[in-house]
Length: 482
Image 1 (cartoon, helix red, strand yellow):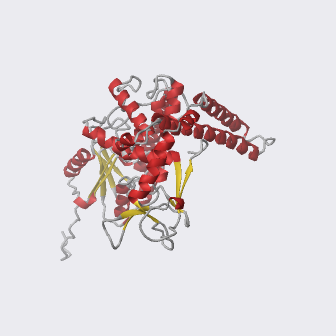
Image 2 (cartoon, helix red, strand yellow):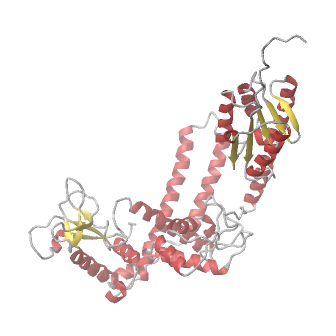
Image 3 (cartoon, one colour):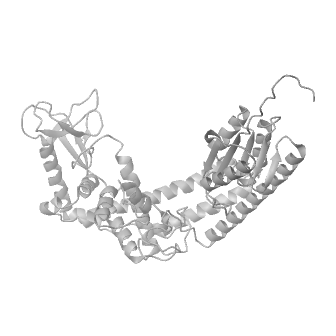
């Protein structure tokens, strides 16, 4: 043997990357990412490879089939390969790594000429070997086809269920509040609670107040978590309560929750929806609206912005409603005086027999049926237009105008249904006394104020104590107003 006098260069230990992914068991594989990593370490150990902590990449609840789904750990691993930090990749199964051909091509391109090996419990491949690349491309194509087939079967199943008026019961608790796990059968005790909630919302009570009350009463949600403003609102906005599919239009297979009569249930749900969505829009200003009766309700005459609670800077024990808009701040009224003045007029109006008689006059009947009919005609027209869209004899602007007209009519009917919620609120509190007023929730009192009068406050004409009624305009809310 000839000696060169040079010591042999030690071979660098193989640094392997462990890649793990779980996509919510969508492919019938529930092996957790931590379990996958443990198996990957065993595979590497049998080959004498090391997996440094910084080369462990985990994508939990990440799909490798959806083109637009982000995989942060996958991207980080490709960057590590590109920097030359990876000699091998270990995966629990090939489909954990790629399920689409373009992902494989991206990996092969990044790993080109780096001699990177790919290992799993079933064997090993060399990413630079043309034969291994051929096999990997076949496996990626097969995985892609399997994913496409699974997606197609799921979509067909969802379509069949929709045609039958059925959707997945769903929910983090395995069911929807008010229903059994089959998504069809009512849970009567919860149905009564939902109807109670709808009545309280239509009476002007806030979703947050109802949530606090239900929590205090020990009423559990389907997940066991406490109720909050958001969970109450989300539940009450679901078309399911009106016996409708998630599109809010198609009839569902289950009976409506809000009323045994489907038409009445639809009208009540639309009214609740209008109240909740309207209330959210009303609180765009910054104010402690839930602490005071008129916060944000009176309008400053000169600038048109809502008045809020303001403390007297010199006499801190005095508070009032005032304009807080920079450049204006010209209106301010004593809290007690303005509230007393408004409450007196509201109670007087609620005690007026003529006013109540006008409210009790027959309202529009069949609004729910009219709404359902318009929605059905709109859907039918949209379907027809899809078939005519490529017809050169049909003008696009006519197609748009036709759909727009239906949308306008549907919005008008929904507005009439929302108006009925105001009428219901006022009729329910007809003849209200001052003592009864004090016993109402603050949210209900605020709702009665906004349902009866628009309040505009103008600058005072003189300084000193007293209340100038002539500088406060109370304009009755018309029957055609929300």
